[in-house]
Amino acid sequence: MVSVYLLLFVYVFIILWIFSFIFLYRKQITCMAGMMIAMTIGMGLGLTIGTLLGLLYPDQFFQMTVVGILIGGVLGVIAGLPFSIMAVLDGFLSGAMGGMMGAMLGVMITTEAINATFNVMVILSGGILFILFLMIQSEVKFKENDWKNKLFFHRLPLFLVILFAFYLTHHFSITTTNNEIEHYEHTNESTDKDLHEDRHDH
Image (tube, helix red, strand yellow):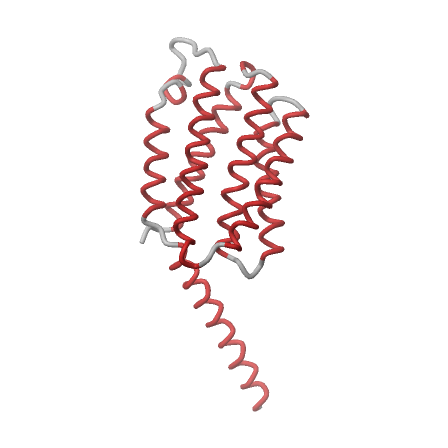
């Protein structure tokens, strides 16, 4: 099974790639495009992260909803910061709504459809981020002999990284992860119960 840490590293790398592009070329991006960027990132990532939290911890609906709202809102705010207060507000509201809806979706999914739902959400968010990358490129004028061109002018590197993320996601099982979490919690409960009984006997 694919390690959850490897999966997390690849996803964070993609998000940082997009955010770096935004911050480095923020002066060339219009306010309207900035609002669109903040809304897209907040809603897309908030929805995906909220869904993942709901899938992993369906018994803690309230907590996961709050966490999903906060994560989506914060990502939207960060994406809107380089542009304007309107972009910040747009990003926060979109991210909060995406995180809330994602958590609601995650807790309603049956066990049989957990992995399929996760794959769909990752493909959806990955596709949205790549299209967003293309949109930002259309707003930016690249200069010759600039070191930043090597990272952001070519589309193939990010596309290959996103495809690699899809491949890892396809070989990752949330059901197995849930079983490990439940086993860990059950072991802790059994240990606490044994300690309580030992104290009672003494």
